[in-house]
Length: 452
Image: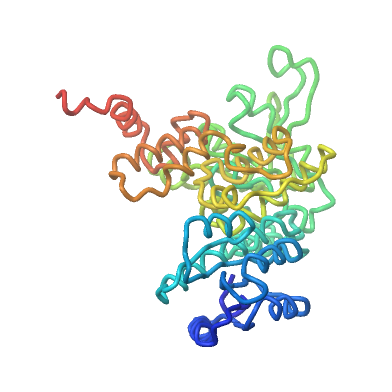
C-alpha cells in the first residue's frame, strides 16, 4: 500500500500527542486525520473510510478498548493500533484479543511508530489482495492472470507474437505456464479458428515420435495396418506447439529443421513429401544455448526456433501476483466443490508470499486445491498448509543460521517442490547433477569432511 493512498485516523485526548503523530506521519506521506476522543472518532468513521485507526488506551468517557470493539464490529476492513502510557502485559493482551493489530507503549521513537504503521498497512494490503475479486484488468484476454511488471512484459510479447507468422521459442521453468502462452499466441492470431495441437515431445518414445509427428503409411512398419495422419497434418492451417523440444534426438531435429525450412513433411513409409501450412511454437525448460554448446541440440534449429523468444518468469520473480493467483484458484475450486470460499489468515498470507515456489504457478494451484478439499473451516491457517511450507515459515527467516544451513534447506525445498527429480532440481539450483549429488552426500552425512 503506497503511503500517499493510506489514510490514518489518530485518536488521543492529548492535543500535543495528536499534533506530533499527525506531523510525523504526514511527513512520511500518509493522509492523517485526528479526533480528540472515541466518540468523535466513531462519528468521523461513519462518513470517512480510513485504513488505520491509532488510538490511545486511556481516554475520558469512552476508552480506547471500546473504540477497538466498535471498529472490529462495524468496519472490518480497517486496522487498529493501540498506544498507551500505561503499558501492561494484561492491557496489551486484552487489546490484541479484541482486535488491535499492534500495541505500542509510550514513549516510543519515531522509527518505532513508522515501522509499526508500515507493517500494519502492508498486512492490510496483503489481506485485501487475497480477499478481493480480480478485476477485469487483471485477467487478460489471454486467459492468464497477473498485474506484475514481469507478467505485463510477457503479455506485451504475446501481443506482438500474435501479429506475426514467425516461429516462437517459449522458455521457462516447469509450471510457469508456457503452454498458456502458446495458446494465447495462437488464439489471438489470424489462425485462431484453425487447430491448436500441443505435443509433449518428451512424453513420446523416440521410436514413435516420427510417426506421431508426421504420420505413417500402411505397412510402413509392423503393426501399421492402415495409413494415419500425424500431428503436423492435424495442425494444418493452424499451430503446432512442440513442448519439451529439448528432448528430441539429433536425428529428429534434422527432420524438424526441414519442416521449418521447406514447410514439408515425409510420412513414415512414404517417399513423397507433403506440404503443410502450419505455424510452429516450441517450448523448453532447459537452456538450448547450453545444449548447443554440448552438441546435443542443433544450433541451426535453435536459431530457426527462436526468431521470437518469450521468457516466462518463475513465480518467485513475480511474487506480487501470488495472492492474486491464490484468490483466483481458491474461488475456482470452492465453486467447483460447491462450498463457501475460505479466506486466508494473515500468517498464511505471509507464508504464501514468502515461500520459494519451486513448482511455480502449477504448485500454487495444486496447494490451493488441496486446501479447499481438505480444509473444512472458513479460514485457512498455517497448520493447514503442506509440511514443507510450514517448515519454510518457521525456519526461512532466521538470521542466525550459517550459509551451509541456508543452502541445505534451500536444496531440500527445491527437491521437495520437484518431487525428488534431481535433474530438475539441479537445473533450478544452477548446478550440474554431479555437484548436486556431492551436496546431498554432505547434507546426509554432515560429518564426512571431519572424518576425512
